[in-house]
Image (cartoon, rainbow over all chains, first blue to last red; front, side, top):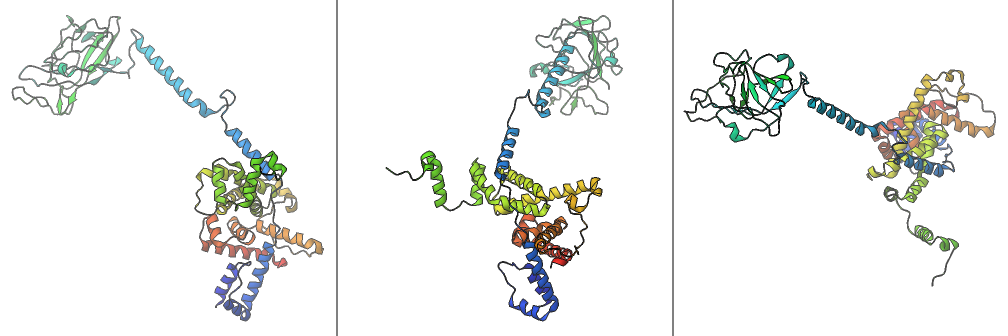
Length: 280
Length: 217
Protein backbone atom coordinates (compact mmCIF):
# COMPACT_ATOMS: atom_id res chain seq x y z
CA UNK A 1 0.00 0.00 0.00
CA UNK A 2 1.28 3.45 -0.84
CA UNK A 3 0.79 6.71 1.05
CA UNK A 4 -2.03 7.91 -1.17
CA UNK A 5 -4.19 4.86 -0.65
CA UNK A 6 -3.40 4.87 3.04
CA UNK A 7 -4.53 8.48 3.44
CA UNK A 8 -7.68 7.77 1.48
CA UNK A 9 -8.48 4.90 3.82
CA UNK A 10 -7.80 7.08 6.84
CA UNK A 11 -10.10 9.78 5.50
CA UNK A 12 -12.96 7.51 4.59
CA UNK A 13 -13.14 5.14 7.46
CA UNK A 14 -16.09 5.22 9.80
CA UNK A 15 -14.75 5.75 13.29
CA UNK A 16 -17.59 3.88 14.95
CA UNK A 17 -17.62 0.78 12.81
CA UNK A 18 -14.45 0.39 10.84
CA UNK A 19 -10.82 0.09 11.69
CA UNK A 20 -7.94 0.39 9.29
CA UNK A 21 -7.03 -2.58 7.21
CA UNK A 22 -3.95 -4.62 8.03
CA UNK A 23 -2.17 -3.26 5.00
CA UNK A 24 -2.84 0.30 6.09
CA UNK A 25 -1.72 -0.45 9.62
CA UNK A 26 1.47 -1.97 8.30
CA UNK A 27 2.09 1.00 6.08
CA UNK A 28 1.53 3.47 8.92
CA UNK A 29 3.98 1.63 11.13
CA UNK A 30 6.65 2.12 8.51
CA UNK A 31 5.64 5.59 7.19
CA UNK A 32 5.96 8.46 9.66
CA UNK A 33 4.06 10.94 7.45
CA UNK A 34 1.07 8.68 7.17
CA UNK A 35 1.18 7.94 10.87
CA UNK A 36 1.14 11.63 11.73
CA UNK A 37 -1.62 12.22 9.22
CA UNK A 38 -3.67 9.43 10.71
CA UNK A 39 -3.22 10.69 14.26
CA UNK A 40 -4.14 14.24 13.28
CA UNK A 41 -7.21 13.13 11.46
CA UNK A 42 -8.31 10.94 14.31
CA UNK A 43 -7.87 13.75 16.84
CA UNK A 44 -9.68 16.19 14.61
CA UNK A 45 -12.63 13.91 14.07
CA UNK A 46 -12.92 13.24 17.77
CA UNK A 47 -12.77 16.94 18.41
CA UNK A 48 -15.54 17.63 15.95
CA UNK A 49 -17.55 14.64 17.05
CA UNK A 50 -17.14 15.71 20.65
CA UNK A 51 -19.29 18.77 20.16
CA UNK A 52 -22.31 18.59 22.37
CA UNK A 53 -25.58 17.74 20.71
CA UNK A 54 -28.03 20.58 20.65
CA UNK A 55 -31.63 19.68 21.33
CA UNK A 56 -34.79 21.35 20.24
CA UNK A 57 -36.38 23.57 22.88
CA UNK A 58 -39.17 22.23 25.05
CA UNK A 59 -41.78 24.37 23.34
CA UNK A 60 -40.75 23.22 19.89
CA UNK A 61 -43.95 21.24 19.32
CA UNK A 62 -46.10 24.01 20.70
CA UNK A 63 -44.51 26.59 18.43
CA UNK A 64 -44.76 24.19 15.56
CA UNK A 65 -48.49 23.73 16.07
CA UNK A 66 -48.94 27.47 16.39
CA UNK A 67 -47.21 28.03 13.10
CA UNK A 68 -49.28 25.36 11.43
CA UNK A 69 -52.46 26.87 12.81
CA UNK A 70 -51.53 30.36 11.74
CA UNK A 71 -50.72 29.06 8.29
CA UNK A 72 -54.11 27.42 8.09
CA UNK A 73 -55.76 30.66 9.12
CA UNK A 74 -53.82 32.51 6.49
CA UNK A 75 -54.89 30.09 3.80
CA UNK A 76 -58.50 30.01 4.88
CA UNK A 77 -60.83 32.04 2.65
CA UNK A 78 -62.09 35.27 4.11
CA UNK A 79 -64.75 37.73 3.13
CA UNK A 80 -63.83 39.85 0.17
CA UNK A 81 -64.78 42.99 2.04
CA UNK A 82 -62.30 42.41 4.81
CA UNK A 83 -59.27 41.47 2.81
CA UNK A 84 -57.92 43.16 -0.21
CA UNK A 85 -56.36 40.95 -2.78
CA UNK A 86 -55.58 42.42 -6.20
CA UNK A 87 -56.05 39.08 -7.88
CA UNK A 88 -59.55 38.73 -6.45
CA UNK A 89 -60.66 41.87 -8.27
CA UNK A 90 -59.12 41.06 -11.60
CA UNK A 91 -61.97 39.17 -13.22
CA UNK A 92 -64.80 41.38 -11.98
CA UNK A 93 -62.82 44.38 -13.17
CA UNK A 94 -62.30 42.86 -16.59
CA UNK A 95 -65.98 42.01 -16.78
CA UNK A 96 -67.04 45.54 -15.90
CA UNK A 97 -64.63 46.98 -18.41
CA UNK A 98 -65.93 44.74 -21.17
CA UNK A 99 -69.50 45.65 -20.24
CA UNK A 100 -68.78 49.38 -20.40
CA UNK A 101 -67.01 49.09 -23.73
CA UNK A 102 -69.75 47.01 -25.31
CA UNK A 103 -72.44 49.33 -23.96
CA UNK A 104 -70.71 52.39 -25.34
CA UNK A 105 -70.25 50.74 -28.71
CA UNK A 106 -73.90 49.73 -28.79
CA UNK A 107 -74.98 53.25 -27.86
CA UNK A 108 -72.75 54.70 -30.54
CA UNK A 109 -74.23 52.45 -33.16
CA UNK A 110 -77.74 53.31 -32.13
CA UNK A 111 -77.13 57.06 -32.46
CA UNK A 112 -78.83 58.31 -35.70
CA UNK A 113 -76.78 60.62 -37.90
CA UNK A 114 -73.52 59.90 -36.18
CA UNK A 115 -71.00 59.00 -38.83
CA UNK A 116 -69.06 55.87 -38.33
CA UNK A 117 -65.51 56.17 -37.21
CA UNK A 118 -62.92 55.89 -39.93
CA UNK A 119 -61.76 52.58 -38.66
CA UNK A 120 -65.18 51.07 -38.29
CA UNK A 121 -65.80 48.05 -40.40
CA UNK A 122 -69.22 46.80 -41.15
CA UNK A 123 -70.05 43.50 -42.62
CA UNK A 124 -72.53 43.89 -45.33
CA UNK A 125 -74.63 41.58 -47.37
CA UNK A 126 -72.78 40.63 -50.44
CA UNK A 127 -74.45 40.71 -53.69
CA UNK A 128 -74.86 37.70 -55.81
CA UNK A 129 -73.78 38.93 -59.17
CA UNK A 130 -74.02 37.09 -62.37
CA UNK A 131 -74.53 38.33 -65.82
CA UNK A 132 -76.68 36.61 -68.34
CA UNK A 133 -74.80 38.18 -71.18
CA UNK A 134 -72.84 35.59 -73.12
CA UNK A 135 -69.81 37.86 -73.26
CA UNK A 136 -69.56 38.51 -69.61
CA UNK A 137 -68.38 36.08 -67.09
CA UNK A 138 -70.65 34.42 -64.69
CA UNK A 139 -69.50 35.11 -61.21
CA UNK A 140 -70.82 34.69 -57.79
CA UNK A 141 -70.33 36.93 -54.87
CA UNK A 142 -69.31 35.76 -51.49
CA UNK A 143 -69.59 37.56 -48.17
CA UNK A 144 -67.04 40.26 -47.82
CA UNK A 145 -66.39 43.33 -45.77
CA UNK A 146 -67.38 46.76 -46.83
CA UNK A 147 -65.29 49.48 -45.33
CA UNK A 148 -66.96 52.77 -44.64
CA UNK A 149 -64.59 55.68 -44.77
CA UNK A 150 -65.59 59.17 -43.96
CA UNK A 151 -62.89 60.76 -46.07
CA UNK A 152 -64.05 58.92 -49.14
CA UNK A 153 -67.48 60.43 -49.08
CA UNK A 154 -68.23 62.26 -52.22
CA UNK A 155 -71.31 63.00 -54.30
CA UNK A 156 -72.02 60.03 -56.34
CA UNK A 157 -73.95 56.93 -56.04
CA UNK A 158 -76.47 57.31 -53.33
CA UNK A 159 -78.12 54.44 -51.75
CA UNK A 160 -80.62 55.52 -49.21
CA UNK A 161 -80.51 53.21 -46.28
CA UNK A 162 -80.62 53.47 -42.58
CA UNK A 163 -78.62 50.52 -41.59
CA UNK A 164 -76.25 48.00 -43.01
CA UNK A 165 -76.05 44.71 -41.39
CA UNK A 166 -74.64 41.32 -42.00
CA UNK A 167 -76.71 39.02 -44.06
CA UNK A 168 -75.92 35.62 -45.34
CA UNK A 169 -76.95 35.14 -48.89
CA UNK A 170 -78.77 32.01 -49.75
CA UNK A 171 -77.18 29.94 -52.50
CA UNK A 172 -80.16 30.25 -54.77
CA UNK A 173 -80.03 34.02 -54.47
CA UNK A 174 -76.33 34.02 -55.27
CA UNK A 175 -77.03 32.46 -58.59
CA UNK A 176 -79.31 35.23 -59.72
CA UNK A 177 -78.51 36.69 -63.09
CA UNK A 178 -78.23 40.21 -61.76
CA UNK A 179 -76.51 41.51 -58.67
CA UNK A 180 -78.60 43.06 -56.06
CA UNK A 181 -78.39 44.56 -52.66
CA UNK A 182 -79.86 42.04 -50.36
CA UNK A 183 -81.84 43.42 -47.54
CA UNK A 184 -82.01 42.01 -44.12
CA UNK A 185 -85.35 41.08 -42.77
CA UNK A 186 -86.25 43.61 -40.18
CA UNK A 187 -83.78 46.16 -41.39
CA UNK A 188 -85.31 49.50 -41.99
CA UNK A 189 -84.55 50.24 -45.59
CA UNK A 190 -87.06 52.32 -47.43
CA UNK A 191 -85.34 52.52 -50.75
CA UNK A 192 -82.11 52.13 -52.50
CA UNK A 193 -81.03 54.97 -54.69
CA UNK A 194 -78.13 54.76 -57.06
CA UNK A 195 -77.27 58.14 -58.47
CA UNK A 196 -73.83 58.10 -59.89
CA UNK A 197 -70.72 56.08 -59.97
CA UNK A 198 -67.87 57.94 -58.37
CA UNK A 199 -65.18 55.41 -58.81
CA UNK A 200 -62.45 56.66 -61.04
CA UNK A 201 -61.90 53.13 -62.05
CA UNK A 202 -65.39 52.67 -63.27
CA UNK A 203 -65.07 54.13 -66.68
CA UNK A 204 -65.67 52.91 -70.13
CA UNK A 205 -67.71 49.80 -69.89
CA UNK A 206 -68.46 50.48 -66.27
CA UNK A 207 -72.17 50.94 -65.77
CA UNK A 208 -72.89 54.44 -64.68
CA UNK A 209 -75.86 54.28 -62.51
CA UNK A 210 -78.46 56.83 -63.11
CA UNK A 211 -77.10 60.21 -62.23
CA UNK A 212 -78.96 62.64 -60.16
CA UNK A 213 -82.03 61.15 -61.66
CA UNK A 214 -81.55 58.73 -58.87
CA UNK A 215 -82.96 55.42 -59.71
CA UNK A 216 -84.51 54.22 -56.58
CA UNK A 217 -84.46 50.61 -55.78
CA UNK A 218 -86.59 49.02 -53.24
CA UNK A 219 -85.24 46.61 -50.74
CA UNK A 220 -83.93 43.49 -52.33
CA UNK A 221 -83.85 45.08 -55.77
CA UNK A 222 -81.19 43.96 -58.20
CA UNK A 223 -78.61 46.50 -59.31
CA UNK A 224 -76.71 45.70 -62.48
CA UNK A 225 -72.95 45.82 -62.11
CA UNK A 226 -70.51 45.16 -64.89
CA UNK A 227 -68.37 42.22 -63.97
CA UNK A 228 -65.36 43.06 -66.10
CA UNK A 229 -64.96 46.40 -64.45
CA UNK A 230 -61.51 47.93 -64.52
CA UNK A 231 -59.27 48.10 -61.51
CA UNK A 232 -60.39 49.94 -58.49
CA UNK A 233 -63.12 49.79 -55.95
CA UNK A 234 -66.74 50.43 -56.48
CA UNK A 235 -67.75 53.17 -54.10
CA UNK A 236 -71.34 53.76 -53.25
CA UNK A 237 -72.66 56.72 -51.31
CA UNK A 238 -75.45 55.78 -48.98
CA UNK A 239 -77.83 58.25 -47.45
CA UNK A 240 -80.25 57.28 -44.85
CA UNK A 241 -83.54 58.83 -44.02
CA UNK A 242 -82.14 60.91 -41.18
CA UNK A 243 -79.71 62.75 -43.44
CA UNK A 244 -76.61 60.78 -42.59
CA UNK A 245 -74.36 59.78 -45.43
CA UNK A 246 -71.63 57.29 -45.72
CA UNK A 247 -69.61 55.82 -48.49
CA UNK A 248 -69.05 52.16 -48.75
CA UNK A 249 -66.42 50.56 -50.89
CA UNK A 250 -67.31 47.31 -52.52
CA UNK A 251 -64.01 45.57 -52.82
CA UNK A 252 -63.16 43.00 -55.39
CA UNK A 253 -64.58 39.71 -54.40
CA UNK A 254 -62.78 36.53 -55.08
CA UNK A 255 -63.90 32.97 -54.84
CA UNK A 256 -61.86 30.13 -56.05
CA UNK A 257 -59.51 31.45 -58.67
CA UNK A 258 -61.91 33.90 -60.27
CA UNK A 259 -62.48 37.53 -59.57
CA UNK A 260 -65.78 39.27 -59.82
CA UNK A 261 -64.08 42.60 -60.24
CA UNK A 262 -60.56 42.91 -61.36
CA UNK A 263 -58.09 43.48 -58.62
CA UNK A 264 -54.73 45.15 -59.09
CA UNK A 265 -52.16 42.68 -60.21
CA UNK A 266 -54.63 39.85 -60.51
CA UNK A 267 -55.12 37.99 -63.72
CA UNK A 268 -58.64 38.13 -64.95
CA UNK A 269 -60.19 35.42 -66.98
CA UNK A 270 -63.57 35.56 -68.49
CA UNK A 271 -65.84 32.64 -68.17
CA UNK A 272 -68.45 31.94 -70.70
CA UNK A 273 -71.72 30.23 -70.17
CA UNK A 274 -71.65 28.96 -73.69
CA UNK A 275 -68.65 26.80 -72.96
CA UNK A 276 -70.66 25.22 -70.22
CA UNK A 277 -67.74 25.56 -67.90
CA UNK A 278 -69.60 27.03 -65.02
CA UNK A 279 -68.04 29.15 -62.38
CA UNK A 280 -66.79 26.39 -60.17
CA UNK B 1 -67.28 -8.51 31.43
CA UNK B 2 -63.77 -7.20 31.08
CA UNK B 3 -62.15 -5.32 33.92
CA UNK B 4 -61.04 -1.74 33.53
CA UNK B 5 -57.31 -1.67 33.95
CA UNK B 6 -56.66 2.05 34.21
CA UNK B 7 -58.35 5.36 34.69
CA UNK B 8 -57.31 6.38 31.19
CA UNK B 9 -59.22 3.49 29.78
CA UNK B 10 -62.27 4.59 31.71
CA UNK B 11 -62.07 8.16 30.57
CA UNK B 12 -60.69 7.77 27.08
CA UNK B 13 -61.19 4.20 25.98
CA UNK B 14 -60.33 4.91 22.38
CA UNK B 15 -57.15 6.70 23.28
CA UNK B 16 -56.10 3.93 25.61
CA UNK B 17 -56.71 1.34 22.96
CA UNK B 18 -54.58 3.22 20.47
CA UNK B 19 -51.83 3.54 23.04
CA UNK B 20 -51.97 -0.16 23.74
CA UNK B 21 -51.79 -0.97 20.05
CA UNK B 22 -48.85 1.34 19.61
CA UNK B 23 -47.05 -0.27 22.47
CA UNK B 24 -47.59 -3.73 21.04
CA UNK B 25 -47.07 -2.99 17.38
CA UNK B 26 -43.76 -2.06 15.87
CA UNK B 27 -43.14 1.63 15.36
CA UNK B 28 -44.36 2.90 12.05
CA UNK B 29 -41.83 3.79 9.41
CA UNK B 30 -41.23 7.38 8.40
CA UNK B 31 -42.93 6.74 5.09
CA UNK B 32 -46.02 5.38 6.80
CA UNK B 33 -46.16 8.34 9.12
CA UNK B 34 -45.87 10.78 6.27
CA UNK B 35 -48.50 8.89 4.36
CA UNK B 36 -50.80 9.23 7.34
CA UNK B 37 -49.93 12.91 7.70
CA UNK B 38 -50.82 13.37 4.06
CA UNK B 39 -54.34 12.20 4.80
CA UNK B 40 -54.64 14.72 7.61
CA UNK B 41 -53.44 12.69 10.56
CA UNK B 42 -51.80 15.30 12.75
CA UNK B 43 -50.71 12.73 15.30
CA UNK B 44 -48.62 11.01 12.66
CA UNK B 45 -47.00 14.27 11.72
CA UNK B 46 -46.35 15.02 15.38
CA UNK B 47 -44.57 11.68 15.65
CA UNK B 48 -42.37 12.59 12.69
CA UNK B 49 -41.53 15.90 14.31
CA UNK B 50 -40.71 14.12 17.53
CA UNK B 51 -38.32 11.76 15.75
CA UNK B 52 -36.38 14.37 13.88
CA UNK B 53 -36.67 17.64 15.75
CA UNK B 54 -33.41 17.22 17.71
CA UNK B 55 -31.40 15.95 14.76
CA UNK B 56 -32.55 18.71 12.48
CA UNK B 57 -32.10 21.41 15.10
CA UNK B 58 -28.58 20.20 15.86
CA UNK B 59 -27.67 19.94 12.19
CA UNK B 60 -28.93 23.40 11.34
CA UNK B 61 -27.29 24.80 14.44
CA UNK B 62 -23.92 23.43 13.33
CA UNK B 63 -24.40 25.01 9.95
CA UNK B 64 -25.57 28.38 11.14
CA UNK B 65 -23.94 28.56 14.60
CA UNK B 66 -27.03 30.40 15.86
CA UNK B 67 -29.46 28.54 18.10
CA UNK B 68 -32.55 30.72 17.63
CA UNK B 69 -32.08 30.73 13.94
CA UNK B 70 -31.56 26.97 13.97
CA UNK B 71 -34.81 26.37 15.85
CA UNK B 72 -36.66 28.64 13.49
CA UNK B 73 -35.23 26.92 10.44
CA UNK B 74 -35.93 23.49 11.88
CA UNK B 75 -39.57 24.43 12.29
CA UNK B 76 -39.66 25.80 8.81
CA UNK B 77 -38.22 22.50 7.61
CA UNK B 78 -41.09 20.58 9.18
CA UNK B 79 -43.61 23.03 7.81
CA UNK B 80 -42.27 22.48 4.33
CA UNK B 81 -42.44 18.74 4.78
CA UNK B 82 -46.06 19.10 5.85
CA UNK B 83 -46.92 21.39 2.98
CA UNK B 84 -45.23 19.19 0.39
CA UNK B 85 -46.49 15.90 1.79
CA UNK B 86 -48.62 15.38 -1.30
CA UNK B 87 -45.64 15.67 -3.57
CA UNK B 88 -43.34 13.46 -1.53
CA UNK B 89 -41.99 10.44 -3.37
CA UNK B 90 -40.62 7.64 -1.29
CA UNK B 91 -37.66 7.06 -3.56
CA UNK B 92 -35.09 7.64 -0.85
CA UNK B 93 -35.16 7.57 2.92
CA UNK B 94 -37.25 10.21 4.60
CA UNK B 95 -34.18 11.35 6.52
CA UNK B 96 -32.48 12.16 3.23
CA UNK B 97 -35.49 14.19 2.20
CA UNK B 98 -35.75 16.19 5.40
CA UNK B 99 -32.03 16.79 5.62
CA UNK B 100 -32.04 18.13 2.10
CA UNK B 101 -34.76 20.62 2.96
CA UNK B 102 -32.91 21.66 6.10
CA UNK B 103 -29.67 22.07 4.17
CA UNK B 104 -31.28 24.25 1.57
CA UNK B 105 -32.89 26.43 4.21
CA UNK B 106 -29.67 26.76 6.16
CA UNK B 107 -27.61 27.63 3.11
CA UNK B 108 -30.21 30.19 2.11
CA UNK B 109 -30.03 31.69 5.59
CA UNK B 110 -26.23 31.80 5.44
CA UNK B 111 -26.32 33.60 2.13
CA UNK B 112 -28.83 36.14 3.41
CA UNK B 113 -26.67 36.65 6.46
CA UNK B 114 -23.66 37.17 4.27
CA UNK B 115 -25.47 39.82 2.27
CA UNK B 116 -26.62 41.52 5.46
CA UNK B 117 -23.10 41.48 6.80
CA UNK B 118 -21.80 43.05 3.62
CA UNK B 119 -24.00 46.07 4.12
CA UNK B 120 -23.90 46.23 7.91
CA UNK B 121 -22.25 49.39 9.18
CA UNK B 122 -22.59 48.43 12.82
CA UNK B 123 -20.39 45.40 12.22
CA UNK B 124 -17.40 47.69 11.89
CA UNK B 125 -17.82 48.87 15.47
CA UNK B 126 -18.44 45.51 17.06
CA UNK B 127 -15.86 43.01 18.13
CA UNK B 128 -16.25 39.40 17.20
CA UNK B 129 -17.28 38.38 20.70
CA UNK B 130 -19.94 41.07 20.89
CA UNK B 131 -21.49 40.36 17.56
CA UNK B 132 -21.45 36.61 18.06
CA UNK B 133 -20.99 36.13 14.35
CA UNK B 134 -17.72 34.68 13.12
CA UNK B 135 -15.81 36.59 10.55
CA UNK B 136 -14.38 35.00 7.45
CA UNK B 137 -10.85 35.53 8.77
CA UNK B 138 -10.47 33.45 11.90
CA UNK B 139 -6.82 32.83 12.68
CA UNK B 140 -5.77 30.09 15.05
CA UNK B 141 -6.25 30.93 18.68
CA UNK B 142 -2.79 30.85 20.26
CA UNK B 143 -3.66 32.21 23.70
CA UNK B 144 -2.57 30.06 26.62
CA UNK B 145 -5.30 28.07 28.32
CA UNK B 146 -6.10 29.62 31.70
CA UNK B 147 -8.14 27.12 33.53
CA UNK B 148 -8.64 23.44 33.05
CA UNK B 149 -12.34 23.75 33.71
CA UNK B 150 -12.69 26.14 30.86
CA UNK B 151 -10.76 24.01 28.45
CA UNK B 152 -13.67 21.99 27.23
CA UNK B 153 -15.93 24.97 26.73
CA UNK B 154 -13.21 26.88 25.04
CA UNK B 155 -12.36 24.00 22.80
CA UNK B 156 -15.96 23.44 21.81
CA UNK B 157 -16.43 27.09 21.10
CA UNK B 158 -13.28 27.15 19.00
CA UNK B 159 -14.36 24.11 17.03
CA UNK B 160 -17.84 25.52 16.49
CA UNK B 161 -16.35 28.82 15.39
CA UNK B 162 -13.93 27.10 13.07
CA UNK B 163 -16.72 25.09 11.48
CA UNK B 164 -18.78 28.22 11.09
CA UNK B 165 -15.97 29.87 9.17
CA UNK B 166 -15.77 27.10 6.63
CA UNK B 167 -17.14 27.90 3.20
CA UNK B 168 -20.67 26.60 2.73
CA UNK B 169 -19.72 23.96 0.22
CA UNK B 170 -17.33 22.39 2.74
CA UNK B 171 -19.36 22.97 5.84
CA UNK B 172 -22.45 20.93 5.05
CA UNK B 173 -20.60 17.74 4.00
CA UNK B 174 -18.34 17.93 7.03
CA UNK B 175 -21.20 18.40 9.48
CA UNK B 176 -23.17 15.59 7.90
CA UNK B 177 -20.22 13.25 8.05
CA UNK B 178 -18.42 14.06 11.29
CA UNK B 179 -21.29 15.31 13.43
CA UNK B 180 -24.39 13.68 12.02
CA UNK B 181 -22.43 10.58 11.04
CA UNK B 182 -24.15 10.03 7.73
CA UNK B 183 -22.72 7.77 5.06
CA UNK B 184 -21.04 9.21 2.00
CA UNK B 185 -23.81 7.83 -0.14
CA UNK B 186 -26.52 9.54 1.86
CA UNK B 187 -24.58 12.79 1.98
CA UNK B 188 -24.32 12.65 -1.78
CA UNK B 189 -28.08 12.27 -2.04
CA UNK B 190 -28.78 15.02 0.46
CA UNK B 191 -26.47 17.50 -1.19
CA UNK B 192 -27.20 16.21 -4.67
CA UNK B 193 -23.61 15.58 -5.62
CA UNK B 194 -21.47 12.58 -6.35
CA UNK B 195 -19.76 10.56 -3.68
CA UNK B 196 -16.38 11.51 -5.05
CA UNK B 197 -17.19 15.19 -4.67
CA UNK B 198 -18.43 14.59 -1.14
CA UNK B 199 -15.22 12.83 -0.15
CA UNK B 200 -13.09 15.49 -1.72
CA UNK B 201 -14.91 18.29 0.04
CA UNK B 202 -14.82 16.59 3.39
CA UNK B 203 -11.09 16.07 3.06
CA UNK B 204 -10.59 19.73 2.19
CA UNK B 205 -12.77 20.78 5.10
CA UNK B 206 -10.74 18.71 7.52
CA UNK B 207 -7.54 20.20 6.22
CA UNK B 208 -8.97 23.69 6.81
CA UNK B 209 -10.00 22.77 10.32
CA UNK B 210 -6.69 21.18 11.13
CA UNK B 211 -4.96 24.45 10.33
CA UNK B 212 -7.42 26.45 12.41
CA UNK B 213 -7.45 24.13 15.40
CA UNK B 214 -3.78 23.37 15.52
CA UNK B 215 -3.56 24.20 19.23
CA UNK B 216 -6.31 21.82 20.20
CA UNK B 217 -5.03 18.77 18.39
